[in-house]
Length: 118
Image 1: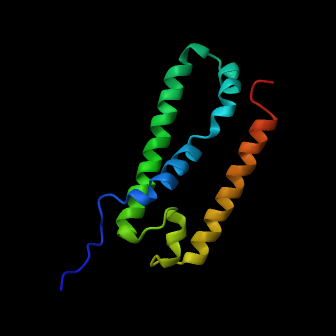
Image 2 (image 1 turned 30 degrees about the horizontal axis):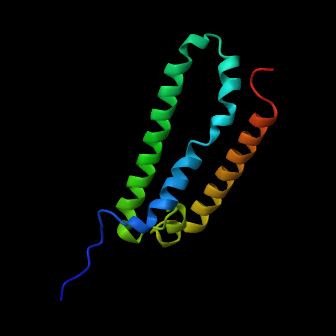
């Protein structure tokens, strides 16, 4: 009997959710004008934005790679949903991740209401 591979190179059915999650990661574009207006040296804006996108993309790639490394082809579309099957204290990990999402949402909401350039 031939055993199915644990790691599959490409699963096309997960592409729409993957693109949506990547778009969500870069969804802070609404605050970009206020950041530009609040900069001490606006001429450095393009370089700062370039570095920011590279940093965010690097973080996304690290999370996706580690999730795929841990769970292989059985990883959920959202890596955090796979943590329940991880050999760690899943309850504590989910609690920490939930609070990180709450803090992120509140900080984005606050930044939208009270932009940096007042």
